[in-house]
Length: 436
Ligand SMILES: *Cc1c(COP(=O)(O)O)cnc(C)c1O
Image (cartoon, rainbow, N blue to C red; front, side, top):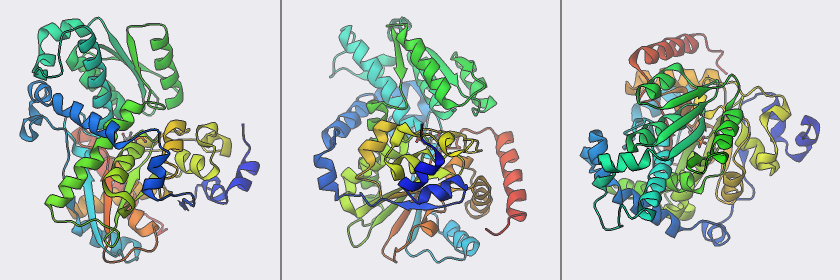
């Protein structure tokens, strides 16, 4: 256990974190991508393997989730310029934003409406594939439409899946596991929204609620799986499969930007702002982006001022050995997808040489940005999705040749009435803002 006093000595940014002051930390241990990759446990081959597995499952997705038919079973989101928001952000912040502003809409990924539709779904289908291959039910060259059959469902009903979640991971793991026929249990932390629990129960998922935070929900999921050999635990804090599922996004984004004629090279850098909870989502995506673009991409992670676990872990190099509670923070935030007090040690260590930095945002600002964005682009996103939005203002030294990419991570499945509640609050918070 570390005390605030000795953590303060490890890095000056800790002072700001303790004060819940919005702040940025720049990584002085960022390495050239080829150097960082040469000592990394994971490689491009691992990400390609994940990408190919998702392609094998495309016929299954089309069959089981007809909304994926338009992309032929590829679970992908749109990327596009948000110039109205760029103007709104300039007016709001009083800062110039050199370069163009783009958004990646993982908020509207099919099946589960958040970035978790990448890693979460990947890990479960990989597990299903492994079981089916071992049982001789499928061969790599078969059509994976078979995974939607009654025969497969019956087979998977002998197995279970468990996960601990603040909401969106549970949604993703729950929906895909139930569809395949697994018995699935989601251990939900207190932050998780009621509608997510209800939706999962409707789909036949067992939801267990906890009055405490995410770490305990994860612990309970882990225990459940330890006592049951037929149970697969999706370990958000340590899973390589989740990470690789997220990383596929990097390779695909390269194609998407090329299709739009957006150049990315050292003279035209891509600067990406990723909301961060435990770290797997932004870590995996950033890893994929580094593979795709090398040193031409810079990745920043964004966190709420009440839950800056990755900033704290990275700046002090203590990773999962330190929690925000150690510096007196409560880990309470409306950005429920980011309400994590202790970062993944696995992700922290893997990503240290690749990431450019981290920054923190207040909850008030998330709502102000929600209001601005709704006015400018006419779209709702959940609070977590706005953590990266202020990035282009926080990060210094860019010029007209830069492409800023805000990774919008969630909101596509929030019910209409809940959206209205959020938007009303956002409007109020915007009109009473202190101008900070
Ligand atoms: C989970 C989540 C994130 C962050 O992903 P981590 O893997 O927890 O870091 C960001 N935004 C939303 C909406 C999420 O649900």
